[in-house]
Amino acid sequence: MAADITAIILTKNEEVNIEECIKYIITTVKRIVVIDSFSTDKTVEIAKRMGAEVYQHPFENYAKQYMYGVEVAKAETVWTLRIDADERLTPDSANELTQLCDSNMKTDVTGIVLRFKKNFLGKDLYHGGVYPWKKMNCYKTKFGEIEDRNMDEHIILSSGKVIEMKNDCLHFDFKNLEYFVNKHNWYSSRETVDYFENLENAKAKSEVDAKSWFKMNVYYKLPICFRSHIY
Image 1 (cartoon, rainbow, N blue to C red):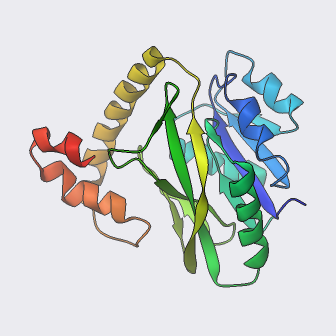
Image 2: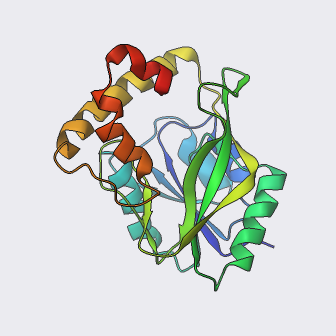
């Protein structure tokens, strides 16, 4: 039986990923909402066929797109799951997420950290600080909101405790190397804008935001030659 969760997925030309993403959450969540940035492939067609609600909205940045998703979804479920099209639940992680959500419906737990194993061009990544990749992507709807920033946005909780899953989810993109190069060039441009916009306001706000604090106060002050090793 599905947990009381609304899943929100942001998409743009994700026809190679969206079906598998929905396939592995459809029995875990009660509702799937896709916010599409006017894809030119079959993303919308596939998402609708898989049972998702689809809304289209011009893309400005991930945070504002997700905010739009929250606004139009008007989720009434206790929990909301933010998941990307290239991410998957496994049978074990899906069962665990269901159990954690069900058992914490009325507790002070308001956030759940998902663990991800990343796969790049067919190979699982275990080194370089990327395993396990952790994101607090499942949260109680009334207690969480996304940071309004151009890059590296996180869900921030107004109160409550955060717990962590034990089973891995998967980050498994089927796109080619050219796509990844273009994507990271685009990311670097947005990261630059975000850095200057937040330069004067960088401070630790919570444990969930510790990564952002470290990046603004430590990482950017290191010599460039050391940054890739720490990242």
